Amino acid sequence: MSGHSKWHTIKHKKGAADAKRGKIFTKIIKEITVAARMGGGDIEGNPRLRTIVIKARDANMPKDNIERAIKKGTGELEGVNYTEGMYEGYGAGGVAVLVETLTDNKNRTAADVRSIFTKGGGNLGESGCVSYMFTRKGVITFSTETCSEDELFNAALEAGAEDVVADEDVIEVMTEPDVFEDVRDALEAAGFKREMAEISMIPDQRITLDDEKTRKVLRLIDNLEDNDDVQNVYSNMDLPEGFDPDAE
Image (cartoon, rainbow, N blue to C red):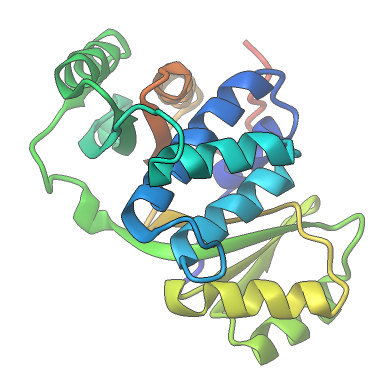
């Protein structure tokens, strides 16, 4: 199964150039706090925490911020108790949208997410209505400017990756979650400089809409991601051929 999509590439570029770094840090700090609370503050002994700390370092988060977030999770410092949640719904054209949240107020988050779906021309669905369309995978992203696709392909498959896909700017290495860390570490040891490494929800199939509906779904996703309680948004939409996300 290939997890590649033009939308995933656009999302990666958007994330890399996102000026809202404070919001990105806030979301990562929440993830670190929850991971430390659930599995302890030892980075080497807590795989979930280790993956999120690497994500934080890739985002250039200061070491002090990471350490404080871990201590809040373990109770060494006072912190907020966050609860994980997942919301499922549909955007324009019946596109599946999966939303992961971390919140200290589930009622507020549920109301906010429902409102964003409604205002964005979509609707919130029942639990399980779209999650079956997605599979959890490891995704490690590289720039074609710094990596050779052929060399990376061979090294990734040898390390245990499931798939390697590319466009002109980005190469994605896909893995099963249980070998994600091994593949990531092996590629780093081999000298490949990654742009991003995360566990993601990848749709089993993708659908393409017309430009108008595509822009509507992109606005919905942007508005969801702007919410402080929303950690991740996944969709099974792909971008139409020749689509310019920056054009109105």
